[in-house]
Length: 151
Image (cartoon, rainbow, N blue to C red; front, side, top):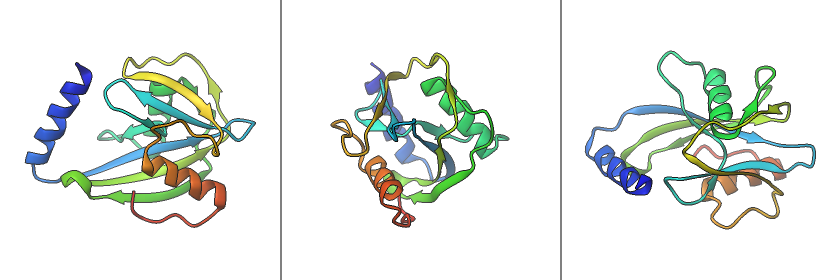
């Protein structure tokens, strides 16, 4: 049912005029340099945790909120590094995404019913279905190649 509702939302969104949105994603690493990925209940694939920035919310506040909601990860302080800032104009959108690199965190229980699974994976052994954009961000982080600007 969630996938059906998500497909309806995407179709409705395409009929609206494009609007500017800002989002955040976290490239969260553990002591083994594995990367945290999430799998949603309403769409296929694995993604870096994150989501949209709400009106009146800071980028760091949005990142902290999304991490707790999706993964149970709590940040002890503000992120110290940004991998890059990206833009996506696909699907009649004007999205702008800031990707934070996070290596200092603690974990509690996840609260979101929209997350089916959370896992840490080696950059060389990502799960099947990892999104293309997620794979690109991880490759940029691993190789140190400067990020592109397109999501």
